Structure formats: structure tokens, C-alpha cells
Amino acid sequence: MNTENIFFDELFEHGRIIELSRGDVLHDVHDECKSLGKILKGKLRLSRLLSSGREIILKEFGPGEIYAELLVFTGERFPGRLSASSKTSVAEVNLKHVLEHLTDRNALITFMSEISRKTAHLANKIEILSLKTVKQKIAFSLLTEDKIFLSSVSEFSDNIGCSREALSRALTELEQGNVITRQGNYLRIADKQALEDLL
Image 1 (cartoon, helix red, strand yellow):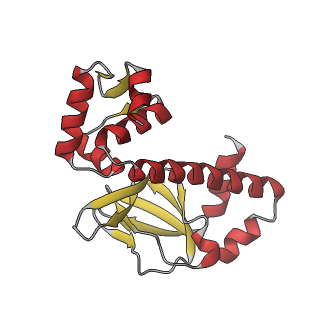
Image 2 (cartoon, rainbow, N blue to C red):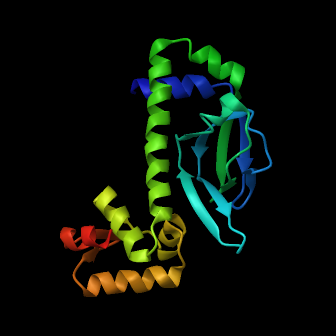
């Protein structure tokens, strides 16, 4: 077991366990953050509802991932709705408990590494949402990730902030133009220069 896993296991060992069913909201935009959380099993999604009623997924968390690692220090409100994508168990610990663990140098480095990874992901998400066309969003995603696991068109469309129909249309056009290829459930780059030219 690596140092990161040991740190998070110890941190949440005596945390408050919360059981959620699919669709249950754990925290909403009106809730002040008072604890740090870890997914024990299942999935959580952090999303925002637009005035149109459309949901934009900001981040999905799977087993072993933590959430609210910055908010727990400020006590600010959650930036979106944190809800269960499936039957989910989480553990949450309060700020006092977190601070006690961070007195260890290795624990602090591990914690800051996790925050750095999340910050990089958020920067990518902001970049994707700022792009104007669906093809640009696909291009940026592929050029950043090299390949994308496409479990469903709906999920990918939520992640890049467009409609399912617009995404399907753009994917078909890019495939027909030999810019991207689908191999099983993966989207891959066929013509890197053509993708870069979209941006």
C-alpha cells in the first residue's frame, strides 16, 4: 500500500459514515462545508444547474477519492450539488481531525499533491466550458487526454457542457472526416493536426 492510501485510510478511519441511494443529494450550493469527505464505494458527482435546467457535471468522484479538500478550510458553501450517481457510501471528518493529521510532513505533502491534481482537472474543465463549438470541446478533451473512454454519449455531453444531439452530430462529422476514430468504447485521435486546427 502506498503512502497516499495509508494517509487517507488513517484520516477517515473514524469518520462519520453516510449511506446514499442513487440521486440523493449529499451537499447543495446552500450548504457550508464543515468536513472533508472520502468515497468508500459508489460514485458522487459535483454539478451545477443552469437557469435552463441543464445540469453541467464539474467532477465525478469514485471509490477512494476525496472531496472538499479546500472548502473544509474556509467553510464556504459548496460550488455545486454533490449527489450520488449510484448507491454510495462516504466517510466525512471535521476540520480539527484533518489538521491533526496534517502535522505530519508526509501527510501534508500527500494532501497537497491531491489538491494539485484536482486543480489541474478543474483548469481543464474551465477551458473546455469556455470553448464555443462542440468540435472544439471534443478536440481539447482528446488533445488533453489522448483517448477518451466513452461509456455513454449522455455522460460525455454532460462533462463538456453540450446537448447529447449536438455531441452525436459533431462526433459523426469528425469520424467521417477521419479526424477521430472510435475503437470499442474509446475515442482516439486519427488526425492530430486537424484537431489542433479546430482550436
